[in-house]
Image (cartoon, rainbow, N blue to C red; front, side, top):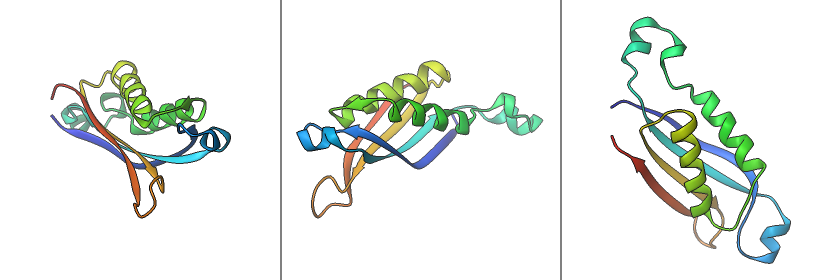
Length: 117
């Protein structure tokens, strides 16, 4: 299976368990790898036969900006579900990071893999 990816998609949202986190917007960063067979798109040079990464990114941005989360785990699961169901992606690997969440660390977060390759 081929992989279409998006790296370092930065989105502002309300996320966190502490009271002060509920009052501000924080940046989260997403990396996503999505399984898709690109052979027909490559052969025809037609976007209709590929996974439109711009459409995926726009959908994730709209969803995350309009939502509030306590945990990055919840955000990751809900984003994975959107990608798999709405874009018919059979397999994905998704990393959700909170930059600066832990002093001395560039970022923290989760990596999940859903579906079958």
